[in-house]
Each structure stands twice: as C-alpha cells, then as structure tokens.
Length: 184
Ligand code: AMP
Image (tube, rainbow, N blue to C red):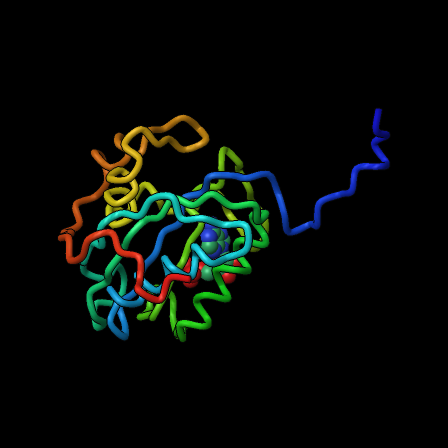
C-alpha cells in the first residue's frame, strides 16, 4: 500500500476536473469576433475544455449609456485549474484582447467572469463565486439557461427561476455558438 507521503501533491494551480460556467462580454472592436476568439482561447487554457457555448446576445449597456451595445454569451468549461488560477488565466485573456478598464461598467474589448465553479462558494478579496449580480443580469441568465436549462446555483436556486424574475432587458441573438477558426 502506498503511504500518503508517496503521493505527490498536485501543483497549487491544479484541482480535480470541475465544471464551471463563464460569462463572456464585449462591446468594442468587433464584439462577435472577440467572443469567438475568447472561446477558442478558453479552450486552449491548460487542463481546460469548452464543453458548451451559447448563442451570442446583443443588448444595451448597463450603467453608462454613452457606449456601444454589448454582445454576451456563456460557456460551460471543464477545468483542472483552481478558481484562483482560472481567474488569473481569464485576466490574462482579457489583457491580451486589449481590455480597457477605464471605469466601472465602462466599454471593454473583453470581459470574462466566473459565474460558478462546481458547487463551490468563495468570498475572497479577489474572487466571489457565484459571481454577484447574476440574478439581475438577463444577458447572463438567458445564455446560461440556453446551454444548461437545469442549472442551479450552489444554494439550489434554478437559473430558470432567476431568469423568469430578472428585470426586463432587451436581448437579441446576433451570432450562433462559434468557435473561431483560430482554434488550436
Ligand atoms: P470586472 O470589472 O467585472 O471584470 O471585475 C474584475 C475584478 O473582479 C477581477 O479583478 C476580480 O478580482 C474580481 N472578481 C471577483 N469575483 C469574480 C468572479 N467571479 N469572476 C471574475 N472576476 C471576479
């Protein structure tokens, strides 16, 4: 029998394979193209696979109105990255896309958020999971419900129920679920 000490510890950026939902958003520099590239880039992260991707939904901005409409989508990934490593990886993808973070709810080339990470609940200074604000954001709930009609938050609330009571917000589909041709 192997002793516990024989088992190498996994690196601290790796975990068991976990399903996580990721919100994608863009309102600058060809948003549909940005989201397609981001899906490919997500799929290229270490130990990570994109399992499902929603249609892309155009919708008016929340907050400051003097900016272009957004395009949003939700992806389901399987990942061996820990929540912290996944967050760092997403920030890296945002930066490579040229994310502008000039003001809260301001225009951006790419915004990537971790909606849920398995059933984990996390509240650290840099990471809140489930992502706060989910319940008010129809542009997150609609694509999420599209790819996972039975999905629930860790507290048991159904995404379908949150969607049915979310504030009105106009959404229309502008592109199918897309993996960019640059996929590697
Ligand atoms: P945002 O402007 O919405 O992209 O917020 C970016 C910051 O939110 C990041 O630097 C994270 O530290 C923090 N944050 C907290 N919880 C999350 C989450 N679930 N997903 C992504 N970013 C998060």
